[in-house]
Amino acid sequence: MLHDIFINPFVDMASAPDFFVQLIWEGFVAGTLYALIALGFVLIYKASGVFNFAQGIMVVFAALTMVGLHALGIPAWIALFLTLGVMAILAIGIERVVLRPLVGQHDAILLMATIGLTLFLKGVGETVFGGEPKSMITEELGLPTGVTDFDILGGLVSLQHLDIAAVVIASLMVIALAIFFSKTRIGRALRAVADDHNAALSVGISLNQIWAIVWFAAGVVALVTGIMWGARSDVSFALEIIAFKALAVLILGGFTSIPGAIVGGLIIGIGEKLAEVYWGGLVGGGVEAWFAYVLALIFLLFRPQGLFGEKIIERV
Amino acid sequence: MNAHDSKIHGMDLSSGRNDGIAQGDELLKVENVTLRFGGVTAIEDISFNILKGEVRAIIGPNGAGKTSMLNVINGFYHPQEGSITFRGEKRSRMRPYEAAASGIARTFQNVALFTGMSTLDNIMSGRSLKMKQNFLTQMFYFGPARNEEIEHRRRVEEIIDFLEIAHIRRQPVGKLPYGLQKRVELGRALALEPDLLLLDEPMAGMNLEEKEDMSRFIIDVNRQFGTTIALIEHDMGVVMDLADRVVVLDYGKKIADGEPAEVQSSQEVIDAYLGVPH
Image (cartoon, one colour):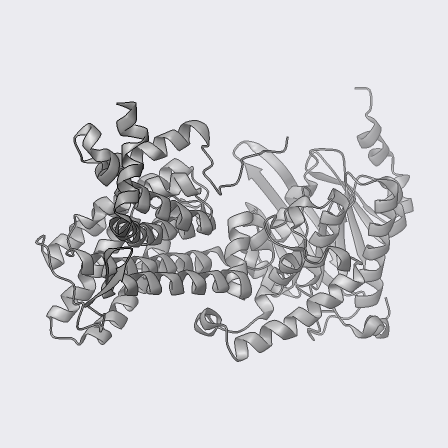
């Protein structure tokens, strides 16, 4: 038994290195997309202290809107920009209708409000676009679809071009967000609001404007995630489930850390793939479905602030 | 308090607003303000004014309503009764960012800095209102957005030199000693180029040397830039040295108003501070 846990899996890894590399790559791609969803959560949490339960459904909603607009005969790129517009309107609407009346309320109340928002978006999405899965307009958007095989390590490692595109786009987006946050007035205002509401107000930062911008940024992240996940599977409400894995990513990475979201996403993406293939046999498979949550549970027990989270120290 | 003094160091942090209010005219008028929290009356029917160019102190025992008064002036609290007239504009409710936009800056009793950011970024955040580039150019950080950033950065460096905090420019403020944090907070308020600067206990928790430094900065800000200052302070020595006029609150009511020496000799003020047998 111990032999099966501690020795055999590593022997397997070493005996088929090409397969091992292939798995790491697939885990890496999945992890990137988990990280993107987690990033959406982190953005909103940092700026407003709201845990946005609706991030998952925003991913679905954005993807559905784009596919739905394209189905009406609108060219893919225009549909993309229209969807950005819809996400902007959604952000402003959420700020006006949901957040503004609840300023200063307890965190739990804000969380409940975002759960309400989740149900609302789900309802609207199903009414407007219908509940059946749709396929993402991958080719129309000019995303690559081929496969490249690498003949290395005594076998073939094949990389889907779509996966490569996903990783590249996700990386560019993270870099762009990082620059935006650290170098610009609005980025500074966002961090200011995250640090101290009253002090931010006193220097003339408008909370309302900042919140609308943050929700819009989270909406953009949701749209990109929706396109990428949609291209790998289908666009359906089942995508929302993936958002729950992002919760585990957040617990690993810390709720306030962008690097944390990325590292957490990658650990879970790669970890669950390896656990499934090399250790799955021991428990009858299905590890991929629960690996993230068990890891999150362990973190909650031993390091509740996550890998990169801020240690909570109150000065008294 | 001479206007021409404001060009020392080649820098001018006076707001430059030409609103026809001369030195010594009324800049802010508080009229019959009453503020209640549920059944508790924090401020009761208080009226006073602040003249342009003066240093006005608000003093009183703990719980007298001093901080509440500042919070009313910069829009954190909305009084149930009364009104505030600032630069000739009368309002009963004002939102904090409107107050900031119209030229009121402040510091806080318990330093409220953006702890994750560097000294430089904290002070830069005070320039938020002065920066005009929009969301999209900011998003891509090119051309005009970048030039604007550099221009404001220059003003901020001037403030940093003025406050003698160049050596901590890049450090995250959360790790700085308290005295320096207070100084950074003053810098952030100065970055707004305010007409009226509200200081909530600028010297609380400081040692003697830090207090002397801070007093010097407050006097310089007032003299060189002509900035009007309203400050809350417990150290009576400091108040007597710095303030042109003093308003004294006790249990939410105004009990004295006048020049430091006048106020100091008022029997009611002495009673409020030392207590009277009932």
